Image (tube, rainbow, N blue to C red; front, side, top):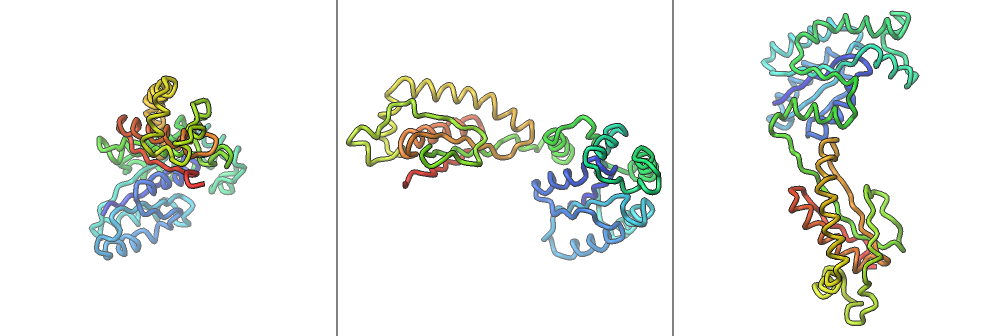
Length: 285
């Protein structure tokens, strides 16, 4: 069982880190009292492999403070539970700014008298835990995507999945633009098979419609340019930590041009080494 303890400075991104780990198939529990860490570990160990990856967030808000966390770690060791510690931190000015922006009190502010004093006091109390940490992530200058990438690198190393799920969704503008679209491509400039009698009842999945559309040089050039654009964009989204990217391709009714182009783009995306799914939203309307 992979047992990961997430701790560190308040405001440094522990909950965000747990969200990242949840996407990595970890079973996550936020704001876990330190005294309960051994109990949960014992429960997970006794479940016969049901919980293979567990991540728990605990911090100084626990009434026992850093002493309770250290005692919990000793209990985990006594159980024979292998664990790793991910310690999240940020610079004092950044933590102060984050608390001012959220207008939330620091857990130790009442004791310390000020946000700055609370941050410094927390750093002192967590110093022993930081020394034992297997991984330390400073989020002072990291975007959410960069933090996600950093955690992936620390836990997965060379096993990082650098592919992206790309949804190619055809749609008809007359039925509205898909709300989930990250990028919208309007292909209504292409010759419309609807006005060809023998093609009207077919869809962009049928070879005669595809052949008609791509017999026009403008369609071929458009596809080439879009493939070039995606070849540039998709790795950038991977670096930013994006998991799913939706490209919506629209024509008037969502049956002919958009379907044919979305299908062709799906082939391009697969050729670029990413995972493409084709969704024809309005093809049956």
